[in-house]
Length: 632
Image (cartoon, rainbow, N blue to C red):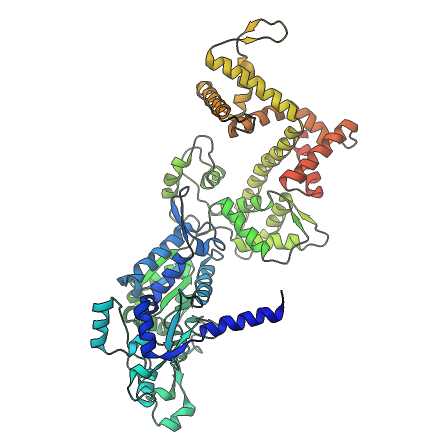
């Protein structure tokens, strides 16, 4: 990157944003592009849709690309959020509501708001998101507010351009003093929203109600100017610099809104319903802004139970933002957080983030009333897997059983804190799944909000994840060993296919030694099929399915291999691994391997490193660990 050139490019980009001209020129621009005059909800909705929308058929939901790089597993809340903006963009009554995100800590509420704020800052710097304001207005006024009522109706009738709102006191004063009432001469300029520069984006965080003043929201009197202008009701003696003022035309974030003092909430009441700010000594000041806040469940329940707040209850659109309940999405959360860190020299072994994610998701699930449905089975179903006795068809029924699922449990912050502590430990060059589970267990003792029963429950979940990982580890080594015996896999596959073909065609096989015709080897076929739970009643359908796949590939000139059918691949691997179990046990657990055992260990280790993402250290750790498991 050449610094001077990049700085020149940035200055050129800024210069393109610096348009300025009289109101009549802006008016012509609006006639050419009516989107310039849209209201705040429509602007945010257009921003989200412009980033792209895709249908997630697997989950039956829409995915909005505006959020997909930063938020995972929150498709339902985000869909509700965008539906709200879609309705509000059409000027339906919901735009006169406060959008409240409610959920547990670390669930993504603040991230949603931050994405909207940063997105607005970027979007208003593009041609599609351009925003223009009356120059000199402290509230970045929509210039069309200059139009008198008769002209507004004509504009709507002839061009379909809707104008809502009135000039702020400062602009009315400026129109008379500086422009002598000639609205066509009022200077308009392009603006870009910026939270740092306090343009179009406001943020309010509650603090001590005794010391926090309402002026933080609505502005304050300029004491130095009173002497010059004589009265406090003169707009020139007032600073329209409250968070509600600067957020006009954009977005206002209330951090933990329900912790605010009631006097602040009453101000929101007026703004949400009447779209006006009440400031002392002035009439109601129109403001067009999206009000979005976030809170936790306990604060929300207290708020709903408070009869004094009933007026606000109907003016809130609630979007629940629970924890993610899919392991694959939880893994993506930790991958994102680790990418943003400075950890570059520590290798993270395969399945490390997965076991941590399994623990986190298990802690958030509610037990099912269905017979035979364990938390682990539920976790797998939620993640799109099929489990014995249940399928994806049972998913909706499982979800309907619960009311608060995802509102409790371990937060991603806790998990990433534990992983970070393990990664930062002196001498750590590789973090494996057992290290991760150990870090999660040790962290429970330092968790401030856990009671004894909760801690015991979470320790049991860690033990359950450990048992699941044991099976995962065996499969990893199984796959690596089977690949090192590829000829055995090919031979077993060919024998199985010969027998399946004879069985389905009701023919016999030629014995290679006696050259006699023999019946298909039922014992061989069943020994493979039983590895994946194919029952006696289902064997015929399974074999016919294999034969159809074989014929289909042959017609296309493709070779059928044991990896060509997922379930058959699993069955072959399990069968081979069962046959090789003693070899694997001896090879992985022996302290002084012979030449042949050493060759096998090196072959398996190389395959783990080359094809499965292990480093030398964690590959050897995995082999030792599985050797210990098989020796029990």
